[in-house]
Image 1 (cartoon, rainbow, N blue to C red):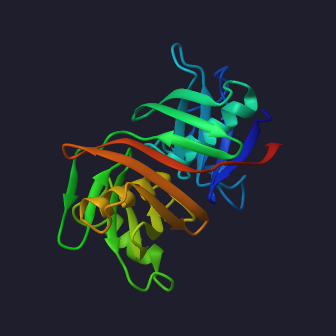
Image 2: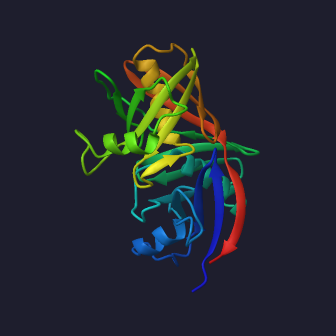
Length: 257
């Protein structure tokens, strides 16, 4: 059966988007989802996202990693879905939607989407890294030679190692550029490779850098392989609140497969 799809990307983090408001997509066929995300035999994407109806909110987000398994929150995917919802006429310039980690608010102005992320009240500072969950689990560590760093090999060793093991963690390598600017490269679980951008990852980096005292700013610029993102936040009694992920989300093409 032919499947209409849309391709979106947010700073190089790309997604297959499907309008599933009529529940016609088989969500249990993980092999088919993985095929659609395959860059050689399918469409090619870091993940697949379904836009579905919600009885109280504007829509519901259902996200799958490129391996075909439903996954935790994807920040860039959420921003792209807001752009997709506007394209479909589901929203105008504001959205409230449900994802796997709860309710999110968002705004869209031209191609810039601002997505409110969940509050974060637990950040673990270890000897050589920081760990926190920004809708997805993230390991954050500094690396000096980030240009020539083997992200896939090193990222995989951390992602599958102690204490993460089978459940795994996304892994972010960070280089400080200025007091409010950090460069980030991310190994994503489920994709099992470096992606050009990771929304929950840069959110984790921004909060972690503030938490360990690398910056006192509450608007952080993140340079990723696919472009530039920003994260703003407030701190209230040790809890990071009003956290916003900000950046472009772009329509690429529409097709039938």
